[in-house]
Image 1 (tube, rainbow over the protein chains, first blue to last red):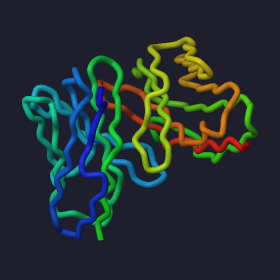
Image 2 (cartoon, chains in turn purple, red):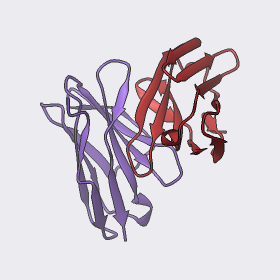
Image 3 (cartoon, rainbow over the protein chains, first blue to last red):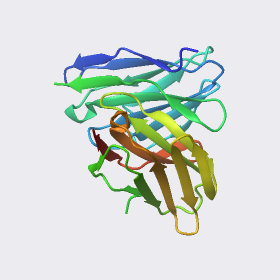
Length: 110
Length: 109
């Protein structure tokens, strides 16, 4: 079992650019959530996808959007990047009560 | 007031010590409680998952939940240098997780 996988591992972007991050859930899991983790903080919930629909959304602006594909994999898109978007972006998959996290994508905005 | 409060540490202990990590929370509706371990620049790893009040043991780890006090704990017995990491508590709120800010633990050889 490969677990939750994310790509890319690291990314450097310039303010104003757009970025797409990708996630493949753990085998058998159909629900994917995205979290943002700033340095020294706990992860903050961005949104969750189930059956290709956004089921819940945290307190993040519309610049953050996502998508879930029929194979349950997911993308996180961030438009008009700000310096404050620099963080570790985590994907978590759920197939019951427990949520398992991927290794994350470290985004640096310069 | 944050929904979940956690002492950021760092907490430094000698190898072999018993470690106690704690979180308090404000929302009495939380039913599921988790502890994650996160090594530097890595994703969180699920350590313990508990439902409602009570204790759960897994090897050297014991999780306790006291819903009446809105207080959860993680105990690590016979701590090892490899346990040095940040420990995050999390509560399940309608399928989204609410995290504490994490406690940094350093186990000295």
